[in-house]
Image 1 (cartoon, helix red, strand yellow):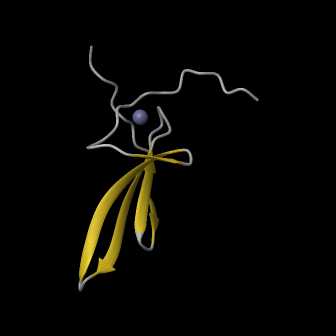
Image 2: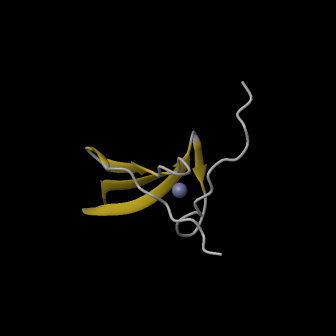
Length: 70
Ligand SMILES: [Zn+2]
């Protein structure tokens, strides 16, 4: 069984970063850029809601199955 692939929405561009959200699971991929030590440094972060996901590579696409308790 193949893992779900993320389906990225259009990129939203900010001055020092760009974001794209997965339409399936709501994961946000943030591509950041900062000028440091005389050169541009790039890196990628993954966020789900307010939580940053610590991981190697891209997290799996896992649409939330739990029902949000209001
Ligand atoms: Zn996804």
